Length: 439
Image 1 (cartoon, rainbow, N blue to C red):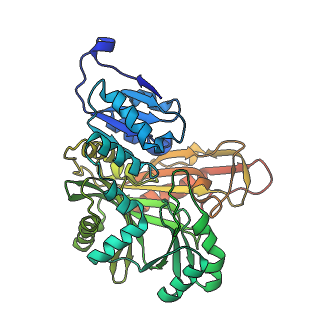
Image 2: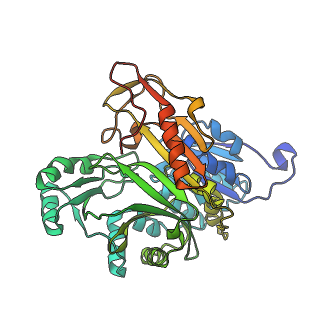
Image 3: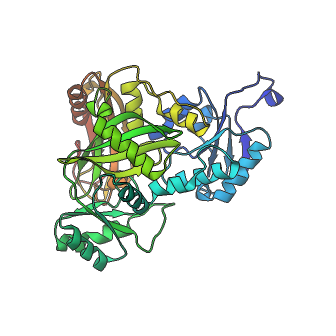
C-alpha cells in the first residue's frame, strides 16, 4: 500500500493552504467514460484516489493517491479503510465517493467506518441486490414487473409458467444489461437461462439463487439520474434508451433532452419519490430505469450511482447540471446545485462489428464526414483486439462511440448517422466491415 501526495499543502511545497474539501475517490473507471467527472470535481474538491495500479491520466486531477496491493484490492474494504486512515493521519477526509457498480457498496462501508456521509451499506444493498429492490417496492406498492427469484432452470420454468410468457431473465446483482435476455417460449427459456445464470464480472456477488424471472413489459425505456440529499430526490435529467440485438437488451444509444416533458411529469416524479422512500435511500446519486407502459411508468431497477454510457456527460452538456460536482457535494454532506442553465439535446451511439471473433486492424472516423453537432468520436479498440457483437460482446464488444449535442433530437440523430457513415472498421482478416450498429 503506497500513499503518495500528488499536490500538497504549504508544509510540502510552500504553496498557499488549500481549504477545498478532501474527497476520497475509489477508482475512476475508464478515461473515455469518466474523465469529465474528475475534471469537474477537482475545481472544487481535492481528490485522493484509491486504486490498484499506478495512475496515469488521472494524475493531473489528483491531490493525492494510494496504490493498494493489487487490481482487486479496491473491493477489499479493510485495506481501503486502512489506506483512508493513513490519509486522515495527515488531514481530515470530508467524503467518500465511487461510481463503479462493483465498488459502491464498499464505498459505503468505508464511509461508515470513517463516520462520513453516505455510510449506509444497507441502503446501497437495497439497490445493488435486485431481489431486495423488488421486495422493498412491493411492500410500498410501487409499480414494477412481477418478479420471481430462482436457483435453477426448473425453478425458472415454473416461474415463467406462473408469470406467463414472454419473460425476462435477469441476474440478481449485475449492471449495464449484462446477462439480461428475453424468452418467449419454454424452448427459448431453456436455451437462454445459462446466459443469465453464468454472466458475471469481477467484484460481482455470487448467490445460491442468482436469477430473477420477470414479467416482460412493453413500451419505451428511460432512465433518470437524480441527486438525493437528506431524502429529497432531485432529478437532473432523463435519458431515452435505445435497445438493440434482441432478445438481448444491449444499450446501443441514449438521448438526453433538457426539455423532455418527462423531467417534470407529476406521475413520473411521484413514482421516483415513492421508489426512493421505499428503498430508504436518503443520500447519494441514483440511476433509475423505468418502462413507460400503457398503464403508466414501472420501475425496472435502481442503481445507487451515477449512470454509465456517458449519460451523465450528455446531461451535463444538455442541461448544464454538473453530475460530478453534485455527487461530490453529497458525498461530503453538502447541498448539491442541480439547476439547469440551458436546454439542449445530447445523444450517444455505440458501434459494433458484424461477426464473432473479429480481429481488429483499424477503426477510424473520416473527419470530413462529421457535421458540427458531432461532439466526441472515439475508437474503443486497437489493432489486434478481438471483439464480437452481442451477446458474446455485450458492452465489451463496442468498437467505437460518437456523441452529438444540438438544439433538437432530430439534429443529434442526423449527426450520429453522419458519424456512422464516416466510420470505417477494418478487420485484420477478411471477415467483413461494419460501420453502423444493429438496432
